[in-house]
Length: 508
Image (cartoon, rainbow, N blue to C red; front, side, top):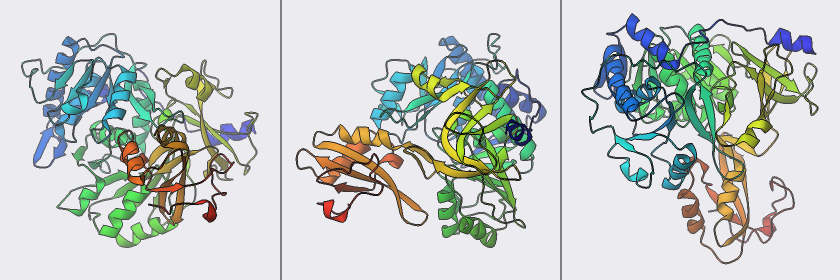
């Protein structure tokens, strides 16, 4: 069985292990300074212009005390300033901490408190969300750095083992947790991306994903480190309106389905990447029937192993395949039993992931880091670690991996990773709620929705519960339906024991 691991994980690839994420971008600036780098509406910047803007801001951030491994939060609307801000943070030596302005103020406040950034980048439109911030807030509209140098900052202490970004994911304890990704993790990921998606494919990439969702790492940096341009939009569904010259879309299956139903996919799109949700045959068939897309790639991977860890490419002539492919370069998949021993071919096991993409761990959560990031007993590399995903899978005879779901209460909805325990904890904090259980239900195929079940200590209006959660959780984590029960079932998830006669209310 150890021989099986060696045979199925043999995708080694040389990559510049000492390089940084922004170093890859700066090298591309040298190669194609006048090529278009970023587009937003009627505004576009060349690689040289984008680099110079980012450099001015980076020098200013250095003057504000940003150093290697400093965390710098960014809470801005989608546009040119967002891309400039990301690059400036990296160039100054910091790791960026995305704060989506669409998130509730309470969640943004928690992420600020937990990450304790040296400074926060904001705009006039987002300053109100940061009113309680205890650290300096820099308004990107102020232009305080316009007289700074346009040369690349020199940060001699910065190495590839320093922080590139900190991204928050849902947490089972009721609080989101920050995943620390280093430059070396991302550089390996981008090296694989450049080998797997050529420059023409990445030449005009849609940048539509929230920075708080790590698909954004691919959308932003894979093109900007290979000579392509990115078009920044608020949502992938904007392709329904106006002319967009795009070659690659990177999204989730549910958004792709909505896009196809609206007829909004442009003729120039060559490649579509999907991740974050189960991919269904009907969607693949609809894509190839309704569009001129040549390739659909299905990608899998948790944030803790740097965006994507396995993939499969489906060409139009090949059609749908029902698996998540093979590991990306320098990545090892281990399918292990309850004793952490490899399972035989075809036998289900828990997915553990090792290799160059494994993150540093969770910020301020040493206990959880120890629990999920384990010593890799199958690696010959000193101090190698593997990440315990909680996902289930099995090896197929050709080395591909079949995904079999979760072994806990984590779910994916519209590509977002959600710990049901986090929603339950927030709902239980309402004074009228005694106990709460949240389920992800798919009563209509392809339409997975969150449903909250609760018992109460006093009468409460459903809208009051909805508002209570909306004030603390992102929209994608707020249940669409609420069911009052006299008592909760005795099973942990209420997945099969909710009875019609236990309901006092119908769903709202």
